[in-house]
Length: 142
Image 1 (cartoon, rainbow, N blue to C red):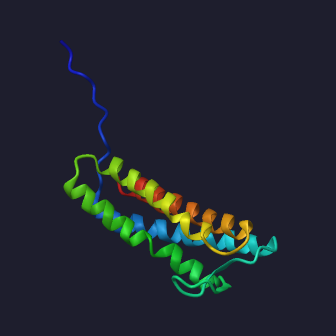
Image 2 (cartoon, rainbow, N blue to C red; image 1 turned 90 degrees about the horizontal axis):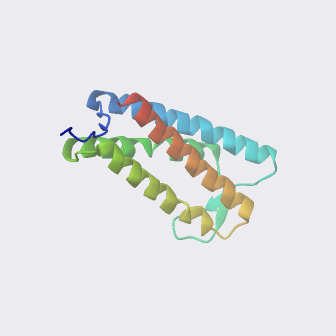
């Protein structure tokens, strides 16, 4: 009797996670700066709350876009490293967690007291970051 075929999960190259996360963060920042500039060109004034829990809106600055796009790559890389160390199928678990995190991240812009165009562009930025960071980890850390 033949053994059932099991699809092998790609290995995580632990020594490549840092570089892959950095690439993902940079791609995320570049992509979101493009989204930010196009939104401005289209006349969409992006606004965010002045502080967590505040209802006061302030204009989103390009520096905030860059920092908020770069930073998530670090915990994403750390999560992948921990999963690779302790979980038999780290990529499957990582992708599931990243997907859930992306969906939950949509709540921030959706709950802003602002217009739908602002919410849509901010959520697009979340998608750009997720695709860039997860994609870079998948491409460069295997």
